[in-house]
Length: 398
Image 1: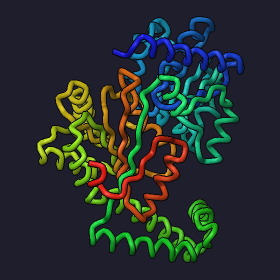
Image 2 (image 1 turned 90 degrees about the vertical axis):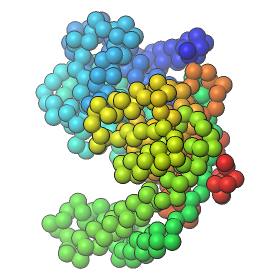
Image 3 (image 1 turned 180 degrees about the horizontal axis):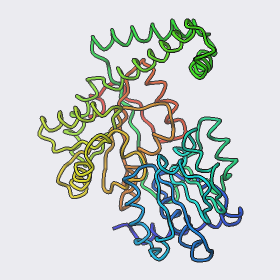
Image 4 (image 1 turned 135 degrees about the vertical axis):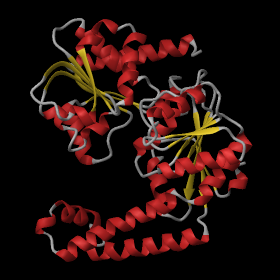
C-alpha cells in the first residue's frame, strides 16, 4: 500500500496545480513528471467543474485502451455522477469532431494531440474551460508554441522535483554501451555513409529543413531533389533500425534479468524486437510476456495482469506502455530502443517510479550502441535527468 503521507502530499500538489489552473481562468497546462497523478487531476477538473456548470465535458486520451481505464478513474475518485456528461475519446477519433461546445475539456498526454491532424479538435470546437496535461514541454518549437497559445503552463513540476517532494521513488540510470556484431557494423557503416552523402547533397547545415521542404512540396520539387530527400530519410531509418535491433541488446537483456532477478519492464524500439526479447528470456527460463500494439487486446490484458499478479517476471513492451499505464512494483527497467526525445525517456523512467515506498530506488538500464547516432540521441534524451552512470562494459554492471 502507498503510505498515507505520500497520498496526502500528492493530493496537496494536485490540488495546488488545479488551483493554479482556476486562477488562470480555467485555461492552462499542467506540466508534471510521470507519476505525479495527472490522470487524477483531469478527473477532478471534470468532476468539480461539471458539478457547478451546465454542459458536457470532453476527455481526450492517447489510445482506445485508455478510454475504459479513465472511466474507472471517475468511480475511483468519486465522480461517477458526472460520467454520463463526459465524452471520452482518443485523439484519432476526436479530431473529426466539429461544431461542438464543451463546458470543460481535458487533454491527457496532450503532446500527441498537438500533431497537425489531431490538433483540429481544438480549432473546430469551443472549449470554455481547457486543461492540457503532459510530462514535459514539447521539444518541437511549433508544438510548444501551440500549447502556449491554447493553454499556457500554469503549473510545472519536473520528474526530479517529483522525486524531491516524495511523490515518486528516486531513480538511478545506468547507460551501458553495446557493440554491434560484425555484420551489423558493416550495415551501419553503409547506412551512415549514405546519410552523409545525401546530407551534403541537400546542404550540410540545413539538410533536414531542405528535405522536409522538398517532401512537403513534391509537385514543385525536381526529380533529383525528391530522390535526394527520400534517400536521406531512408538512410536515417536504416541506421535507426540497425541500432534498435542490435542482437547484443537481446543477449545483454537476458544477462541482466538473470543477474538481477527483479520484476522488470523492458522497452524496445520495434514490436519484432519485443517478441524476440521475450522469446530469448523464456529460453533462459525467465517467465516473460510481450506487450505491444499489434497483439490482440485479450493477450495484452493477460500479459499485464500476469505481470501484476507475479505470474511472469518480465514484461517486454514497445511503446504501448509509454503513457497512461500504472505498472506497480517493477524494480528494474531496461530500455533497448530509444530516440532523442526527452519526453519518451521521462515517460519510461516514470513507469518504474511508482513504488509503494518512495525510499526504494527505481533502477533504469539503457542499452545503447556505442559510437553511433543512438549515443547522441541518448545524451539528448537524458539531458534534464540526474543520477546517471555511464558503463563501458556489461561485465562492469552485472
